[in-house]
Structures are given as structure tokens and as C-alpha cells.
Length: 526
Image 1 (cartoon, rainbow, N blue to C red):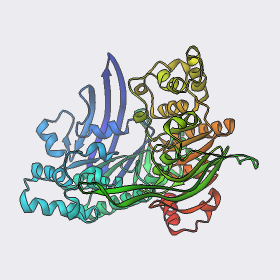
Image 2: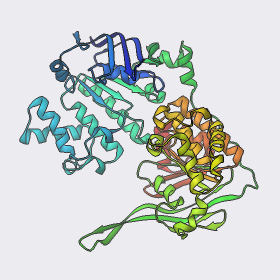
Image 3: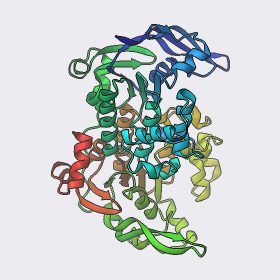
Image 4: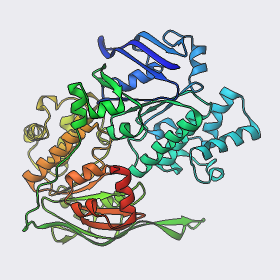
């Protein structure tokens, strides 16, 4: 039985007098119990197509065509019809649960609200149903979690709560829009297993939107490939992966970051060295804020990075990766020694660190969050030059122009603002901001996690080129082990603040010794 049928769907957005076509004559269907994946790069129309199903598009959207749910037309349907189907029959799981969950309400209240509105449940019956849902999605100690707020849960737990909310009213169709993008490989595998299990036990149909073809291969029955708002290919998963017909599909499948880094010179100097580095956060309680224990974020981390070398850091969320990076940057306090260019920087004051900061730069996971929306690209990139008095102000535009060319951006765009660029372009801007100071060492904290595979490949190639040209040392943090393998000379594996494995990248990936490393590699690489 066909559950959802989309015929000749077109969506246009009008803004500032300009009309943009986001979806153009798209047709697809989903049968009962079927998993259909929509793949394509950012801007291909995947999410717009999904949001169109129950009219969740903004008011400036003009929708044409037909969308039927069990033969009931959705385009032009009354608000009461849409409200009946939203959440009841068709439910959504979004990419980032922290933006979907209310930070001011407990998990119990947020789950209970939907159950009360749609099913009229209250009291003991309501609480029993909430607990049942939390157990179903694998939340540990569900009774203890009822009064928890979203920020008190891990990323994987928050996503499980979102799935519980989506399942609350027994939907027929679950639309999952990039539900695993921001998760560790092990958590991603757990969420995929959970969705597959729920699909079997609940009889769900699943529309899965992603740019990760590895996920598609694991979960989908059929695949729909979209490019610039148009469906360019559709077919069974095996056919799409083994015998793709369209050039764009072939390009997506080839967009796997491969190869390895250039070898490090034997006489390359050591840029960064740590000796038993510790980052412990005190747990303080009581009126006098007495220290009763410690959160051991990093335990005795010892490693080195040479010029032209990349040290990959992998591990699940909470393993200590970012705490390690922030300690190296001297942005959080730590114990024991950190040497930069043979100088002990572990106890330098903020003023003493200032002269060194231009040589140690950081690129963050979310360029949109780390780039000021109120500043132009010119102002963002030149800010470091002003702070560190690196050049004459009159030369700033020339220097910004030069670095934009180097990272593959048009210098004529320097007076635009971050929102006018794609995700990949924003990440290039973030890299340009770091590189304009000509650093010796760069910390890269998940710089490719939110990007399409094709864009990820481009960013990796850019990082390789810059490293070779300037003999940069990289500390590369990522949960994407394929990219870590492609970029890293050495790898450290972290778990609960400890380095459980450390060695050459080839050795760690091809012959892992630690059980935890083996689990990570199995989840990521199959």
C-alpha cells in the first residue's frame, strides 16, 4: 500500500523581489514499511521536499503539485487536517535535537505535552506512557531522567528523546532529516540500529534524509538522488550503489576522502609537546563550595606534533578531545607541561601568551556559530591582524584578498556577510581567518562534520595543501574516521579522558590493539 505519494512537487521562495526554485517537479512515493532515502548535497532540495509533506514551509513558499497521505491531499489542506496528521500520522526527527527541544522544560514535560494534546493522557496514564517511550528508545534509568533538562543529556540521549517524541502518537511515517550528522560513529550506529528495530516492531515507514551515503547503504530499501531541486536518479539501494546511471550519482559515490598525507620530513622540528597533561574540573557542593571530587576530562596525555605533521584525535563525545584541544590553546586551565617551539607555555599569563597566540590558531566545528553575523568577511579575517598588529591597516585588504585566493574564495566577496555563503564556503572563511596570521600550529575541532561529502573532500584537500606549503602542525579532532585516516600521520584514541591507544595512523587503523579502538573502527568502517 502506498502511504505517501508526491507528484510533480514544485516549491519556490520569494524574497526581496527575487524568486528561487528550491524543488522542481519532484515525484516520489513511500510504501508501508519501506525505508526511502533522499540524498544529495546541501541545497539540493531534500529538506524542502520533506517539510512540504505537512506544510511546514515558511510563508514565502509557493507550493504546486500534489502530496497525498493515504489518498488525502496535503497541499491546500485545512489547518485542522494538517494538525491531525502532524505528529499523529507523520512525525519528524531533526538534525540537531538541542534546537528542537525546549531548554526550559524537562523531558517529562516535553513528552507529556504531545501526549496530552493528541491523546488526552494525564496523571498516572501519562507518566506510564512517557516511561514506556523512554524504555523503548533505550534511555538508561528512565525514572531518573524524567526531571532532566536537554542540556543534562548527551547528544545520543537527546536524539533518543527526539525519537521518543516522534513515536509518542504512533505515526505511520517517520521523516528523519539528518538525524545522525552530529553524532559519534558508535552513537550513530546505535541510533540507526534503534530506528531499524523500531521500524520492524512498530511497522513504520521511514523517509531518511542524509548526505552520508554510508548510512544510506545500511538502512535504505530505495534511494532518491536530488541535485539542485530535481530528482536525477531513483532506484533500489543495491542498484544505486553498484550500477549508478547518472553522472551526479557517480560523483557522490566517488566523493569518499581517500589517500593519505604527505610524509613528514625526518628532520622536522617538534612544534608541540605535552607531558602528562591533565585537565580536571572540580566538583563543588554546599554553601562553601567545597571540592568533593573531580571530573577527569583529560588524564596524563603525552604526545608530540612535528612541523608538517597531523595528529588525529578520535573518541566518543565526552572522551576529552575538545578539553585536550582547549588546554593546548591555553583556553582552560590544566596541569603539567605544554611546550610550544621548545618553550614551556603551561604557566604563562594571558599577557605572556598574547605573543604566542598568533602562532597557535583554532578552526571550530560550526563556522556559522564562530563567525560574527554582524561583521563582513573582510572584518572577520582582518580582526587578527589588528589584534596582533601584524601589518599596516592600509594593507589589510590586500592581505585578506591574498588569503581568500589561497583558500579558494573570490576576493570580490570580502564585503559580504557569513549568511551569504554556503557551509563549505564559511568553513574556508574560518580557515582563512586562522591562516592570515601565518601560524605554525592549528587545532581543527570537527571542521568537516556538518559538511557534505563532496565539500568535506574539498576541505581536506585544502588542509593538505596548506600544510605542505607552510609546514603546519595540525591537531585534528573528528568522529569521522575516514577523514582522520586520510589526513593524519599519527592518531590518539581517547576514552573517558584517557589515551587508550597511540601510534602511527596506519598501525592504529590496520592493526588496532585496544578493544575500544576496535569497536570505534567497526562502527565507522564496517
